[in-house]
Length: 385
Image (cartoon, rainbow, N blue to C red; front, side, top):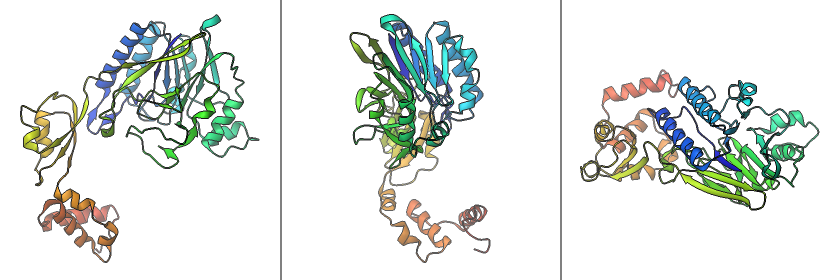
């Protein structure tokens, strides 16, 4: 039995002003080619199918196309919701989809949905756990002591009556940690001491009954605790901190005698994401310019602020996403203690000093008035200030 593990498609996502639908369609076509070449029996999609709870029309069309192509190949699909998804929207039409062997578990209903894949010696139980919060699970198990996300997932699994003599696979979308070790974040997630993107940590040890756990939520591909508990990561790079990630999809082979084998098939995007750093003159020198259609983050080391740097870069790299500066001025700003600066200082003084520090010149009266007007509208300063 061969399974392909996907997660965090984030269909409809943008990089600032750049719509990624074309890039996402391209990578899904590459995944379809892998499915054909590898003779995949089923695809596991571990949540965050869409980037927003109310997805764009283009995003829903792309998912419809992808699922239709999988159905036409006779490949089964098992898909759960993530914290970015709207449960109701993702669940819409799920009963009809089952006739095409597309199984969706987007709304937790008090039980861990189970489907049997294959038969005889090749039989594998697929369990589907959509993204859940402790409050949702308490509703179904009022007599259980459920305070945290980990409590909630533990209670769900304890009540699932899992036969450990069988081969069991779980699809889940949670923030799972190893033995005292957090997973490596991809950067598109926001991190906290106990959560990522407001999702609390749970231990991988909760999943000991499963032969493979297909996780979603963390964007960097990695194992958690043991090889068979794994984040597939996003199929595309979605943040600057992912520029050095090599994206891939795990292909899981489950054999009654051999156990679980995991292979990784590389994914090559339509446009890569890169971070280039240096002086503008050097970066735009023709001898240094490569792959001009890639998504580019730039760090300029020029000491002077360059007017319309974005416009200049986009003439060579049209998909320049953002420009940073790393020079004496920015390093000086990084060393400033903001709390001390703000003491006994007026708004005008603070803005004047900041402007001078950033641009090495005085702010004009017209510019100051624009900033003051904006600050009043935002409620930062009073009308009288």
